[in-house]
Structure formats: structure tokens, C-alpha cells
Length: 306
Image (tube, rainbow, N blue to C red; front, side):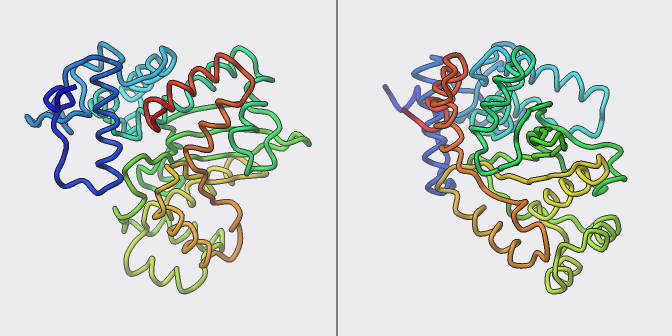
């Protein structure tokens, strides 16, 4: 296959991003057999191998019809809920984005939950073995933001995915999920701190050293994600909560950030963790459910490679 059909790559990519951009370019060229599009935003004129054309119409950025339909449903919700931060162009056309990846990872579990709650619950326990209190799955959502935002962290932090579960004693639990592919937790500090400072005081989960640093530098995504999880679980009176990062095994930065945050936590250290993307997919493949395993096979081909 010619480099022209694979499409342009990016000279500024680090090794991990270059690897996955090429993988997405190959999938587009060899599996989808589509020409590459422009990006990474709607108004650019540069072509990249990982970009699609007219993904809004074709659904090519999704590995199942249920994922495509759920993505379109969320875009319709955005028209009614201005707090949602979905970028439609990225969702439908950027194959490298973790946003469509999240729909691809969880939409079919959501569909299965509607059809067979017991089977969906069993698979959820398999996918997230690290969390011991999952007994029954009640809800699966993607791109969920608790509103009104002023009642939580007063910013547009959202859950990439959210599972509402129940333990063996019938006590509810929240699992918030941040999915990463080539992007990192990293920067984008929020200095709108009054609401967050009050939440830190209320929860008493960060030590004085971290509180002082947050006062100087603002709250990074890893802090906001955990705090939003805590705030939503508290307001909904959930007994359990966990904030999970799902990203490729080679994403060591997320692990380092989580370890550093745990070092400054006075409680709830076990409530934030990373689960490798490869592990989640392999568990889905070994789930014993043929239709779900087929979705995970397509996911592996698309995002991890055979």
C-alpha cells in the first residue's frame, strides 16, 4: 500500500502518538478503504491519515452501529444541554481521538445492559476486576457531566464514561472513567478555585502540601476528575466510588500522575486507579459472550492491532 493512500502523518508526534496515528491510518486505508480527510479541526486544510471525511454520515469512526447511534444521540443532547462539551467534528472524523474510542469501548455494554442486565453485570465485573464491589450494573453513560455544574466543581469537567453499579448488599456505587489514547492527563489547569477549595475542605482528602500547590498553580485534570467523582458520589449518596483511567499500557505518565496524587491523599487512595486498555479489551474477548467478544475483537483491531 502506498504512503499516499495511508495519508500524511505528523512530524511533531512523539513515539507513542506516531505509532497509533499510523495504526489508525492503516485501518482507514485497509479496512475502511476510505480517503483521508482534513483536520484536526473543521476549519483546517491539512490532510492527515487518521482523519475521515463525512464521518457524520458514514459512521466510519465507530466499530458498531450501537456506538454510532449513541454518539448521534449525545450530539442531539448537546443541543438541549449546553454544558456538554462534545466536539462533533472530532467525534465523527478524528480516528485518533479518545472521544469516539470511549463510545466504541462502552456503547455495546450499554446496549447489552438494556437487553440482558445480568449478563451485562457479569461482563462489567470481568472488565473491571480491580473494583471488588461490582455486583449489578444499573447504568452506562458516555460524555456525562453532572449539572448544574456550580453544584459540583463549577467547571466543564465531565466523565468520559460512567457506570452506576450496586454491591452484594444493594449499596450503590459510582465508577467514573477517563479514557486516554494518545492524549495525556497533564495540564489545562483550572484556577476558578473557590468551589474546588471548598470541596477540598469538605472532603479533607488532600494533604497540606498539595493544597498549597493547588492554591498557587490551580487544579489539573487529574485533581478535577477525582473531585468531580467524589462530589457526584456524595451528592447522590453513593456508598462506593472509584475514578478510573483507562489508557494504553505504555502510557506511563498517567500511572506516575496517579501515584503522585496518591502520595498526597489523606484518604480514598484506593479510589483512583489505572486499568490498561489492553487488559480491558482482553477481558472482553475472554468474556464468554460471543457477540460482545466480537465487538472487542473489532476494537482490538482498530486501536491495539491484531
